[in-house]
Length: 454
View 1 (cartoon, rainbow, N blue to C red):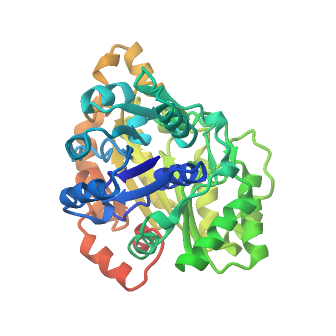
View 2: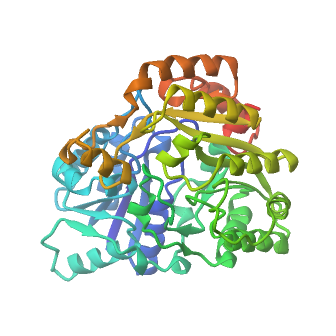
């Protein structure tokens, strides 16, 4: 069958994000014998006529739409993307009425029933789409289309080592030049229980790893084919399991690849986890294998906040990983969430002073917790009567501890003025640099832009 996959995401702040979800789906569909094209909206401001022309020219049997985000999760200045997706569905429907329209992606998977009804699509795949999309096409091709519109993926059935990313179907070179790195995924699934997080809902709680050789094969291919020499490991937590990250680094060194990388790390895997090596040995290896910057999902640096969000590490752990980065000259960012349940003025001030003391390259702070169905924090708030389950919809809703809400807004503005390396997207603080970022990228600056702040 002929399949047109459309990346609906146009959010480019601070950098364009390669649509690795549909890149993996496209690779799986091509392997199964289908003809695939990817139409990527990320580099197109005015795309309606071009998309319509592509549909008419390619004449697809199925149009797959990827919805990466519902909104930008930034309070109070939220950007909502569902209406944008609705326009794309309408265009596809009016251009080729007999095409089957299927939607997937992480954003869609959080609200599948609501979005199927709101967008009037034919089918929706919630979760990982490689296998389910193939099954759906088989049913359609056999003249036995499913009666139910929602197809829920079984993540355990996805073989990570059989995934073949179709990088040739997107403008990989432009993504690297304008984004400063190329995304790569080494595992799926998350064992952590951060109260607000959707990763366990989207990917499951069992961690499924790619063979480190396969990971570095992909990196080496992109290095040779597209001259990519900076990668972003977009796993929810790159250093769990620790042994997996070590094996990837050793494979990079074995091949003598001249590459750099950034990753999301937890300050410590857990107090009970048996470490594979000392922190100093681990960060030495990371540095030798090309690590230039680390983004820590710290969220808070006080006991109330860490406990409220079920982070599983301590203030001492945060200090230790920060010290390791400073020692090994690795740039590092602490991502923070202010206003979690139970937070006080005193605990907030503790986070601010403790984080500043770690001497980070950057701090990216958000106000409030974006609520999604079935997350621990949402379930707790429903049980407490703060909100009803049916009130958590696609429209952005945030929890901010009411007693400190007004104080937070003013205090974070003040902190950001005093500390030039603090970025607060929801308040539009330090977010007015797109022209500067473009100029830096044009000069060949690579890696995350936050590392330029310190």
